[in-house]
Image 1: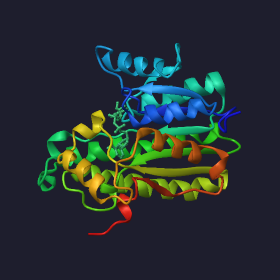
Image 2: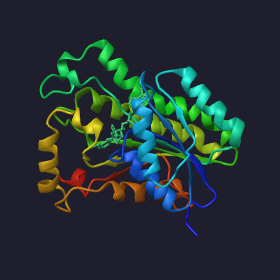
Image 3: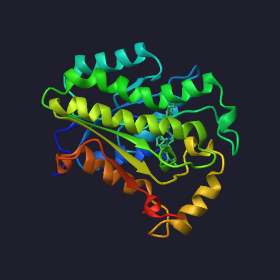
Length: 261
Ligand SMILES: NC(=O)c1ccc[n+]([C@@H]2O[C@H](COP(=O)([O-])OP(=O)(O)OC[C@H]3O[C@@H](n4cnc5c(N)ncnc54)[C@H](O)[C@@H]3O)[C@@H](O)[C@H]2O)c1
């Protein structure tokens, strides 16, 4: 029997089979969890089709899959209302979502970031965690767990990560404030700081090739991590194995973040 047997949660952020959210869902399903999913909506339904194909590849033919643009309160309200109508309660949430206009993710152009690009990056990538948490509180009557994905560029300057680094700093601290307030309801919130993975989101980041090279040279394990390794840490954080852990930022980066210059 898997350690997630009997637990049900929602996974935000599968774009395709390379997404961190896909690896997390895979690990959760292998441990017996029941997963509900959302996809970013688009006019022609391409995003839904890609997300659905990725979920099918996880062995789920007919998933619970709803559209949700996390910048829209109505979308979030609809998703949580539908879950409440069908299942009443939730055990976990996976937040694996980020966006910033790639125009501002070029080496050396952080100082050109517009107010609009800043607001958009922080809205999609950081506020959305709070927006999900506030809608899930009454659906986690006995407690629950929430995780989000972050990156080292939220702690230290990582050239090219730019406004996304600012958004990750906001996301990480949002998680701590949420963890403190919701702790009395036994709702735990933790972050996973993952190493670089070749995904759609990563392809928008300036200097990403150098980041991969540096990861292999500088990290303590002298290698990059895999999506599976992040998936296993997600299982730990979303299961009872981590019952005493909240407000943490666990680095799954082969030790990259512990090494100085
Ligand atoms: N790939 C990496 O190197 C890396 C490293 C550390 C952390 N992360 C983080 O992992 C998370 C997942 O990214 P990924 O690398 O798997 O890339 P990805 O492109 O596969 O996933 C990003 C997801 O965000 C979704 N998204 C963007 N804007 C949205 C919106 N307005 N509403 C709803 N969904 C929206 C996309 O549809 C996509 O599913 C992100 O938080 C990212 O910052 C990635």
